[in-house]
Length: 368
Image 1 (tube, rainbow, N blue to C red):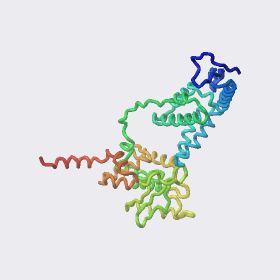
Image 2: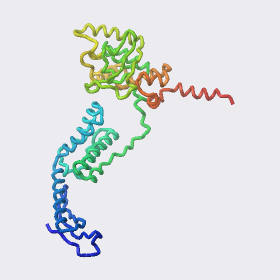
Image 3: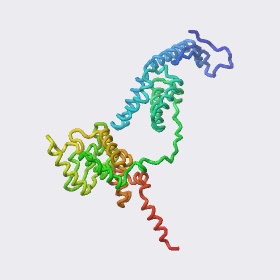
Image 4: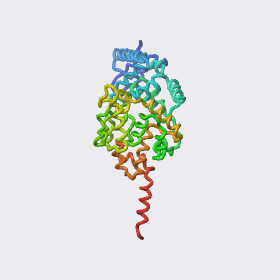
């Protein structure tokens, strides 16, 4: 291909370079473009630089002839190293469903701004919360930005992914404000649970406030019925036993007499089963009870009892409500449920009405 020498002295740089190349090429997205180079000292150098440029364009096109899935898998190998294994497994399922499913048929060179806009419509049509949709868009953009570094993906296309506006009022009530039972509501519920196993399960959840993963990971070695204590040092998530996320979650809590007596009777029943040993899960034996089964029985007895619906996590909120009604302060509550005092006070502040009244009473006691 030809190279040119600049004849106009006014355009010549001070370093004495006068040769340049001008060529036409097709970019990775099929657009025809013209390229004019800077000045070089000789005709030979200009030709060499033109060849390098056209070779790099060809390489870029070859790199973009790969499918999105190759970029996605490469990005995920880096991303997952920053996450705990259970968090990574959960996130991967969401990303596969909400990102890979859409982009899998595409090669990188065919992903344009129009395709990105179609992806946003794809996400908009999903029955998910705005925050969840926006989190998926953030991960998607992160993946494509990774592609701009390692696959020469066009950063302008990557940057066109924008989050949805969240017009939901910010004063939406917290889950802890409605997803719980009072003691009267729990008593009404538990009186209608005619299955012995689930009576033990739901009583245990209500009187301990354990997270569902902590509850499912318990085996008989974790409980000392003589000293009335329960050791919590692990949780079970998607079939994997892992250590808790925070140090506060590792704790030993005291069990009340009523619950201890119930668990002693329950353990006697379990010990009659073939091959019983203390490594068995407390709830489920060899295989722990699934979340789906727990929810199904909870919904069944909730309907029979004619009390408001709560989730399994609602038992944790209910336990906190019970502790507060019994006069426990935020430090007692935090230590028992494995949270920080700050988290307890932020999450359950509305449940401390007596403390608010005490504050006013103290102010009223001040003499003028």
